[in-house]
Image (cartoon, rainbow, N blue to C red):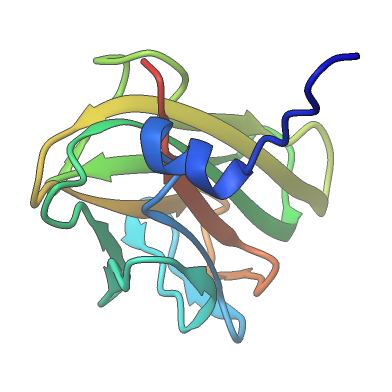
Length: 162
């Protein structure tokens, strides 16, 4: 005979934490981007936002939320021509985080033919302090205005245990 022990996961989470704050936002409608300059992506639909930390098209680290975060992004265009590119960048506190941290903060993709569908995602891991904020900027170089489709989204959460 032994003693049966039950593990209450809600109590475990109290001791080790959970992956919050966490959020996912999507574009509720398509947007038009001019060629050759970075434009801040606008998100008007929250899929979830555990700490109400996403507002005005940016995620802001709430009080007590400093730590390491992982962000995922996805952009979608349908008519980029041969040799032109799409770039998407994570901005931290108004500046491109580039290669200053782990992961890839910049997605750069060149079209290989006429009217190429550019459908791509990426991941970025970085350290954020309280009040730091994250935004998504997108650029296309097709030479004319292009549609950034509502399938574009941004999500992230705080990593625990590291």
